[in-house]
Length: 79
Image (cartoon, rainbow, N blue to C red; front, side, top):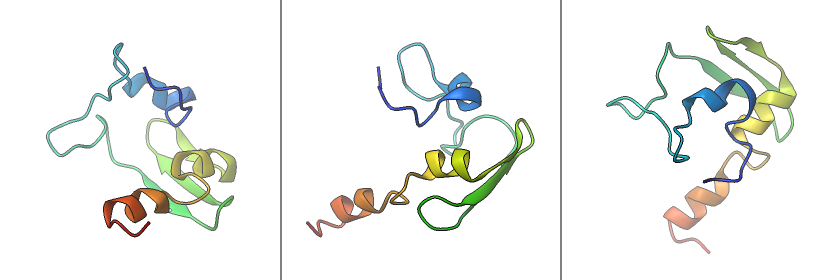
């Protein structure tokens, strides 16, 4: 079971009992699409019809303070 709070609070409902995510054929979480506008490591706003507008703190937790750059560094073998 993942120990991150990446899917905490309202997004936790997308996590299955085994810790995996419930995604559709397009690898998206079920439900209507939302939008996230990151503004630096601690700013931004997000919107999803199911939860409404999320402020900077929630958006920052969703994208992480590094905007997931580390995953691309690893993927592109830039370490």
